[in-house]
Image (cartoon, rainbow, N blue to C red; front, side):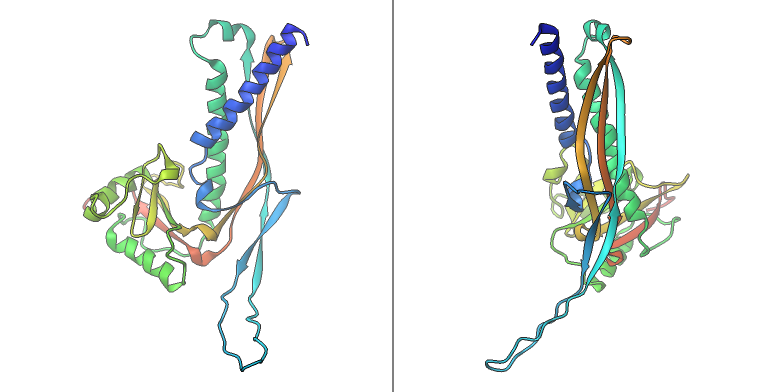
Length: 278
């Protein structure tokens, strides 16, 4: 192997490692909050809605009656996404920072935002909602959503999540129970670097990518099993040297999709950004 070839191979190896590390640490905030399937072969996959199982008695030495649990398939279609940029050879020698890591992080952020966008778009298709877009995010409104999930027998097992915008996060902080350490836990471990905390058995996450209008955001409370995310190809990096440009072209790519699995497990809330009163 020639010296130039060895340098090129080293560049590619380290760049790929940087992209994967950046995506895992700084990419998607929401991937771990939903059902996830990896290494999907084909253009789509299927998640199952499992019906309720019932218990019954039986006579001594009698046959157990099958519950007849229903399985309703929900298809999740995968789409290919790309994020690429040029890395000029001479620019690498001039800049005062590690251009490779900067671009790796930028690509990882882009793909992470796309992952979250897919999950949020799936949440948007939910039909259950409480309150109006002219209302703030109050404790009473949260309790309405909480009650709706309970009435639907959605498990209260620590895997309920809520997504709110920056303005709604400030509204939550005006609720004593949310802002007091006596009622909530610290930032959720898997969301390092994000505004998050656990309250009422729900992990609250501040997210800047929620649907919005000029005056409001759409917020969500959901259970992990109600939304699915599928990956056919986790992040893959292709780096090609172009002599006519004297630069590498770095292409990051992935194949992913998301879908709403169970309407009963998601509640939407249209919330005003700047309420006139608490």
